[in-house]
Image (cartoon, rainbow, N blue to C red; front, side, top):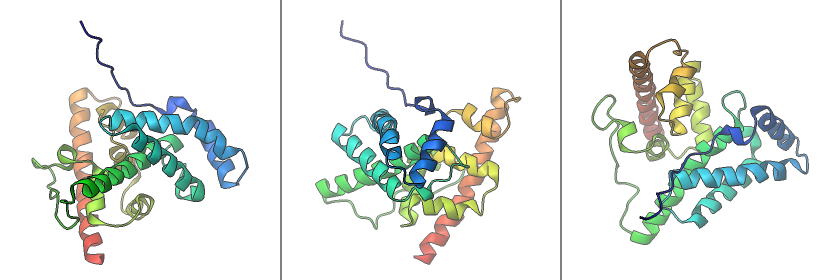
Length: 222
């Protein structure tokens, strides 16, 4: 019998305590010489492992390149990260998925020379069969409707979302699927699983309706 297949698990914030993440971020903002190197010691393998778990079919070199480029981009503009919204590693994972999708898209277009940026992928249909969660990642959908950077998208959307919806959006952008994670930020720990699923679905639909309006405005502004 052959070896059992490897079970890939996405890394979590347990790789670096939250207090230490905030401390490192503050030191990087203050441009302390050793702070970024300390972050990279933990964040680089963390991000590479995350990208391997999410994009296992892609070449390891691409995982490493995306992770390194992302960390360097963060070092150049650390102020784009808001520690009040989510942990630093969660922010970097979210940005890593966004950058990886971009890298895959560029690689695919370069290799096939068939894809066109003008061709629509799938129209957003809230609550329907083509629900954004069932077709492709949320941040990929956003890329089809605006050239804004992910931090800028989050900044603009933050003025339109209440605190709960913003946390739901951040979980969606990070690719979280577990109902329990959403129920936690929505204060639904008391509810049974069925009620949690129903309320989480309502919250996602509500957020996606707002995103649809945002996408329409972004296309009109373009």
